[in-house]
Length: 361
Ligand SMILES: NC(=O)c1ccc[n+]([C@@H]2O[C@H](COP(=O)([O-])OP(=O)(O)OC[C@H]3O[C@@H](n4cnc5c(N)ncnc54)[C@H](O)[C@@H]3O)[C@@H](O)[C@H]2O)c1
Ligand SMILES: [Zn+2]
Image (cartoon, rainbow, N blue to C red; front, top):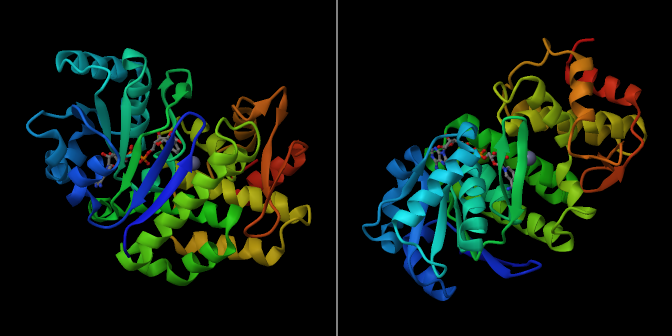
């Protein structure tokens, strides 16, 4: 696939998302084309740097990267503090660029550092997981977790450029790829039957990292995310459709203390629950609910939920950020490709959905 460019019109800055196999080999040119000059510092984690660090040398030269810990545990204010220290040590000034090179965790933490260091320096996102390429690197949300909850501190920081090179996904463990694919399924359900059908038809090739299939799918997801966030950068309304499957999904993550599921796996369960409520209200055709269920099943095993209690999940849901003024906003499907947001989902509907998902009483 030739490289694709998607222009995102954000509140404070317009930026491009470029997608294409091998783009990182022309990093220097890309920076020049997008007027990114001055000193660049890469923030990354060990795994990504060891496997793909050589691709960034063109812009970093011999400056060593700022390495942060692996995974969700590293998404803290303490890590942000260590990034600030490293930036000061390297004498970074306001004309500098932070290059976030890694999964969603690196993007969120390095992005938060970029949003706040010297009241803001330039950020380039170079996502290396499927989830980060289709979701977290686009839209400008950055932030960290507190011990009391996920993503409780954050900022909006539109990047200057997002570079998605799907070739780096080749080293991604199968479970991480699958976790990202669940979010891809979500894009199909909320906005595009064509994408959903393509996933159903080409699932095997996608799961084998077939570039001819994967690259255009990533581009389509970025297009959908870009068009949704453009309408509503700060999530006052339409951006909420991106939360399809996330109300129940977040509850499952919370009751298992974020240890059992990859985010996408919890969202897969959440989508099954949301589809159940949608179909029981007659909003979503039962055939669409069945098609979603079948696709998710084909994607492989997910960690179990049978030992989790419906009441615990319900408790977690009422503490969720999506409760606004005491009302739980819930994204439902009006058939694959269409969504509606409601605020009148009853406890009974939630209980039924959680049982369909597989939780016990
Ligand atoms: N800002 C947003 O809008 C937004 C949206 C969705 C999710 N998120 C956040 O994203 C985070 C999850 O991101 P994630 O799923 O990318 O997880 P992650 O960043 O923890 O990465 C998962 C693992 O994959 C490894 N990895 C990354 N790239 C690799 C590669 N190319 N090859 C081999 N290993 C690689 C990482 O080292 C890590 O161990 C969560 O914290 C979530 O809150 C943010
Ligand atoms: Zn998500």
